[in-house]
Image 1 (cartoon, rainbow, N blue to C red):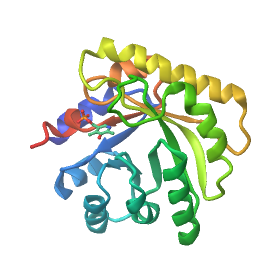
Image 2 (cartoon, rainbow, N blue to C red):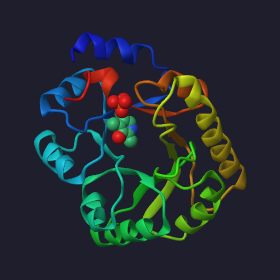
Image 3 (tube, protein in one colour):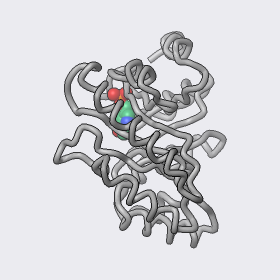
Length: 217
Ligand SMILES: *Cc1c(COP(=O)(O)O)cnc(C)c1O
């Protein structure tokens, strides 16, 4: 990881796309370097690790939860994060909503779509997104602001393209459905290997780890 290479990556990303630095297993020094490069959105997968990191680095940046949302961690997630990108069931949404109500805040959330239709994967099947969306907007302490997807676990960026297209189609369909109390403005897709393809296919937010910081050890 070095400042110059982070800056090179950022320079090629269009201004309308938000970079979320994925910082699982990174050191506070690495995150500080990213902040120095102008990154202000950070994603973490693990509530416990994130708590320590936020304790060290403070709340002057925006923290996104991008890991599997377990209901027993929903309380901490509700207090720590500024956005939760991985809502994929009504059950976890209700847990999050309850804890956000207790914390006196409203959490922006994304529905995670299983666009690769991989059986082991998190995320709702694309065809179930609208039903979940209509349930989420009934909850008063979360606010639906978009969709997130991972794409295929393996394969080339071109393999990911059809998944990103699927997510984009669902995103457009939900926008056209004009669901009350939702404001669908974020489409979070693309990681280090696939973000260029994702941007071509309409991502408004990319989640980058390796390409910014080097391989995780
Ligand atoms: C780790 C992670 C990323 C970033 O992965 P890289 O391949 O290192 O860029 C993006 N999204 C999620 C959900 C992750 O867990």
